Image (cartoon, rainbow, N blue to C red; front, side, top):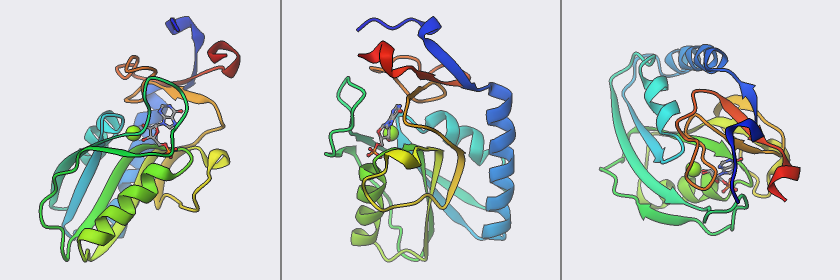
Length: 181
Ligand code: IMP
Ligand code: MG
């Protein structure tokens, strides 16, 4: 399906996103109180968010990147999460902050939390997501930190893709379900 940028309705502008990220970083700075953190960015979707967020965090911080995939060129999650690259350092006794683009049905978030807890005894594990599509949730899991709650629309931009395109948009928008039919 061919999609054009005019089919995307803007939901959050670049300005709104950056303001929200600064507010969120402030909450995190208060929460961690200068304690060291390992931030894990979930590629590819969370890359823009993670990079902008960590610039406002003031504790000693390490960045790690893992790559998962649950979409295969469509707008539906399959429920199966594919670990493309999940190489991580020793996270025992660390404060771990997972940074995701969106929690939709919740499969990916659950997979990640279980993966970390099965492999390490972390000191603290927090899940942070740019977007939270609460209405679509199937798995009972919540973000500890998030920027925006969204409705059950397909979201693109600022890291989120439609068939690998539009990650580079500076805003976040949605594609109307009727267009996707
Ligand atoms: P879940 O496993 O159903 O929670 O889906 C989470 C993953 O699917 C995210 O990491 C995204 O990569 C992708 N995803 C879910 N909803 C959207 C969306 O509206 N736009 C783009 N990607 C999405
Ligand atoms: Mg993702």
